[in-house]
Length: 322
Image 1: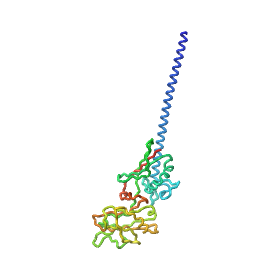
Image 2: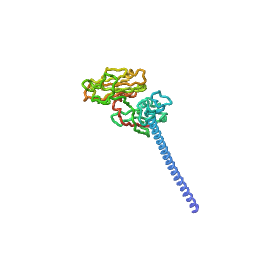
Image 3: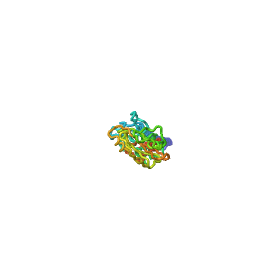
Image 4: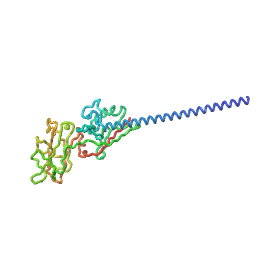
């Protein structure tokens, strides 16, 4: 073999090796680039999915706490396809929605029909959620609207927390403990036998009126509750000017449901002025407050407590995952 032929063959081998190494390098670069593109694409999809879920959760929370729903009093009717839930209180006098003040009646109705009202209406199908209310006061039990727990393999859960006011217990009438001490603002009772002081000048009766409508009576439960040391001899009466009653009823330590008594007094009337009468028959050091309050129908008895008149802010917590 000639030296020239050997050199030409060697050059060809070197060129082939260079080309092969070049192809390998290009393949590696393309592979790395493809992986990088896949990672970037995955991150973009993940970011887009997270952003989308956050937006869905935020929008759902805003709809629920800032609107009263459609129709505005949807909680009073059977649930239909056109029902859109909203939890915000509606002011019956002005007809306006009170944002971030939640109606306990709407909350109870949503809890009873959660899946039908939330999925496909407030949240898309395929999502899961939990919805809770927590009081800023640790002495209050959380209110569960839907208490779901995300599975362990769920990659991401979006949480929205909003501060709200809970419109729960409404005060109809109150008689303060100053009934034992005399009060210049004492209302004049229509019952002539209910004198504010007895013959010895000690406080005896204290009476105060309250208004009632048929609509309220049909949608609420009414309780007589007390705060303070109520003597065993104290009595209470609910009547109206044209149906006076001097037969007193005893107090007890539990809330007293008075719906039946109010219904009897109202008869067929849509509006009535009723009176709460308290005969103290006690001593000033055993003073107490007496209230008639309204709560939504089917409210559990453990939530009929005077502390709910001033429960402070609550936290509306919505968790969403898929």
